[in-house]
Amino acid sequence: MSKIKIVTDSSVTIEPELVESLGITVVPLTVMVDGVVYSDNDLKEKGKFLSLMTSSKALPKTSQPPVGLFAETYETLTKEGADQIVAIHITHSLSGTAEASRQGANIAGADVTVIDSTFTDQAMKFQVVEAAKVAQAGGSLEAVLAKIEEVKDKTELFIGVSTLENLVKGGRIGRVTGLLSSLLNIKVVMELKDHVLNPIAKGRGTKTFSKWLDGFTDRLKNRQVAEIGISYAGQSQLADSIKERLQPYVNQDIAVLETGSIIQTHTGEGAFAVMVRYE
Image 1 (tube, rainbow, N blue to C red):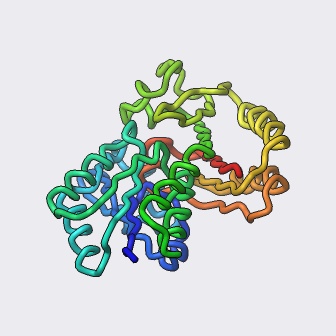
Image 2: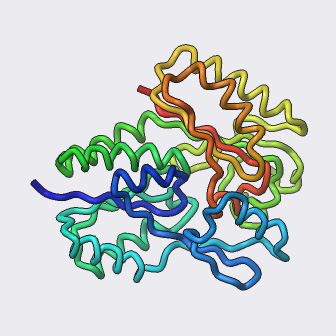
């Protein structure tokens, strides 16, 4: 029976205990703040990156992991007994991580299947965790890949931002269709679908988020929900209140987690994400 290991990147928002128990390898992206380069792995302490970002002179710059780091990771996993590796990464529309992963696999000469999750954050976590469960249970490569596609097809990711400033400064506004970069102070809810951020609600007050949530819960009434994840940048009050609204629609406890430096850089403080996986 072949041994399959699951690899992902640090744009994923995931509980450390899941990484440990499922044997997942997380390759860190990097963030440069005022000329200082940080590994994303060193910014996991709650509130640490947000403090750095809010006090920085310019918007931090994120970078995909070096090709050499992927090569080293795959060589190590192979030496430790991995016959096959499945690497699940952030959508290519937000980062070149998946391509760096492919190049690293070629250098290492390892048997690596690289998957573009089409998502990030906890929506990517859904794929990573379910794939790792199948692999840990001794499932074949085909079974692992089939599970990833099944989860991907049944996942939705919604992002709410309180300002477009970071998206504009980071050059991501051009990848958000239908938004005017001059309207920095509007609140926007976007859906990440097929690698594209599409605005689905916008307005000038917090009622923008409440109105979207009303419509979202109406849709959940007619769906079987497997799990929901909520992530946030900044304070957790809004995320906690969203959890209260959504918990009745799913049996599994909703994880409310601070998103990592990669997502916070692009969304800015006060952002949140709601991710749902359907049965």
